[in-house]
Length: 116
Image (tube, rainbow, N blue to C red; front, side):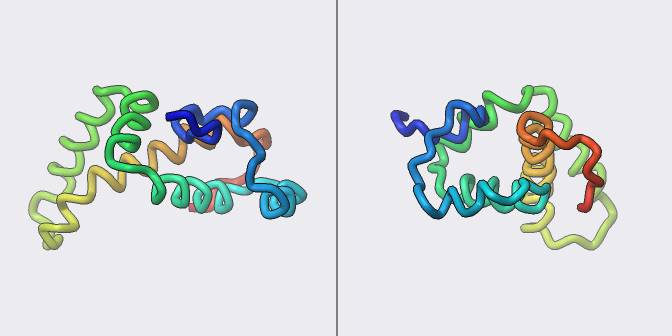
């Protein structure tokens, strides 16, 4: 992966400002949790399966992944949840975890209220 904007780094100083005017327009505004969430979704949407696996392996401890799988199974037991949704529950929890990791690394205003 030679793309300097490689999202797996999650390092704002290593990211290249190669998106020009569109990016500079956004830079004028303060980064919010909602904005960060949308940015993450856009990045994840562009990743291949291999790149997504690499991102997870570099940013999420294996024990955490196992926890989400177990917890999601226990949480959904006895509930009338669609089987497809039940299968996706660990991934949704993992997405929340990645969002939190990204927030911890990038947001400079820790006093901002959590609005999720």
